[in-house]
Amino acid sequence: MTKAEVINEIVNRTGIGKAEVQQTMETFFKVMKTSMIEGNNVYFRGFGSFVLKKRAKKIARNISKNTAMEIPAHYIPKFKPAKTFADKVKKSEATKKLL
Image (cartoon, rainbow, N blue to C red; front, top):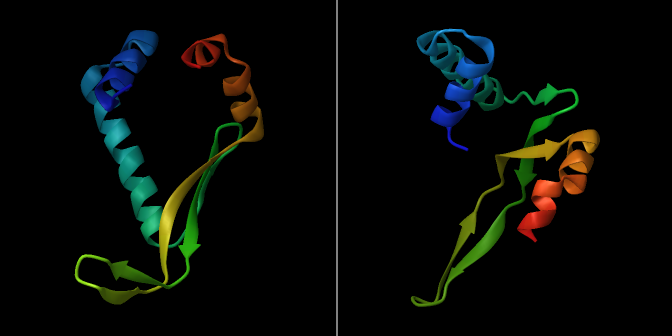
């Protein structure tokens, strides 16, 4: 499902104008990104958590040039679904059909 499809679904279910929903979605994503860039995790009870995961420094190798370079330690965003949400997805008939 794309962002445009999500916006259309919200418009159909709530009756709120498309421009308002789109602006709300854009603001939501902007707040999420800003919060994580500032080093904060974002939690949604019953849905999941967007957390910062630390990656340790490592040595990467370019085998075609036979060189090595060090990649410094850094953080990446990671989504961890809530247990109840993950269980519902596992038990869903729609996801069983995907197998």
